[in-house]
Image (cartoon, rainbow, N blue to C red; front, side, top):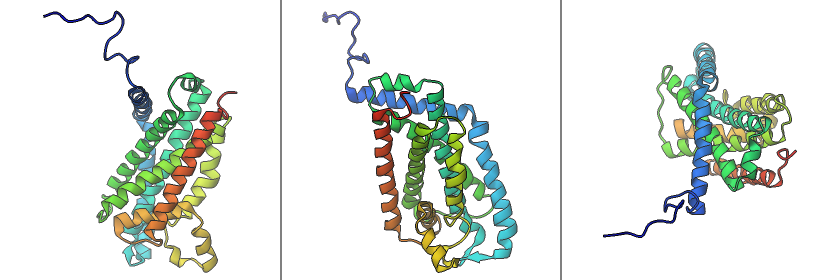
Length: 275
């Protein structure tokens, strides 16, 4: 039984004959694999330092200082700071990964290959964000495992826990992307984490309950978006929160939509990329 031979140089499964959806999926997977490979290749810089830093936080704040504080909102101080420290590590590493990686692509001029390729802008943005979120979640899991050495970690609300860390990592991955687009030198990608991200994190209720603050300081804290992420995650792990859960989710989803739109607009216009 004979079959009609295929046209020379063409196969049914060739990339050229595939659908746009499949091509986009291949492109997306390629960017994500490259980002994850980068994270694992330099694991001594991407995974180990935050683990050491958070171990020191648990020892100093949770063990030494926490033993004198006692409880916070009726919860042991060590248990109270676990959600904040995990979320802090996720935020910092998601932001730092994409800002350094994408700016490195700009500096090395490989980002131009992505821009002239037929892949859509949303594929480029999603690929880099997915890589940054992967690092944030990996570091968060490591810190959570470290926390288990100091206290018992329970997750009464797993859905809230998972969605909060994914949304938080996505928000700051998108923010890091915007920073990388506008950065003109390596020093520029350190300005936002140093002068904005770190203060907002420390003032976001990681180490204390907002109820301890005077009225004016409590009102200012409610203007801090990290405060809502930390408290939503605290609800997922401990079942308590200083904010209403729906408000935290509405804020996080709003940030994702706005920052994603900004990132796509910057890619479309080539801001800071086609100079």
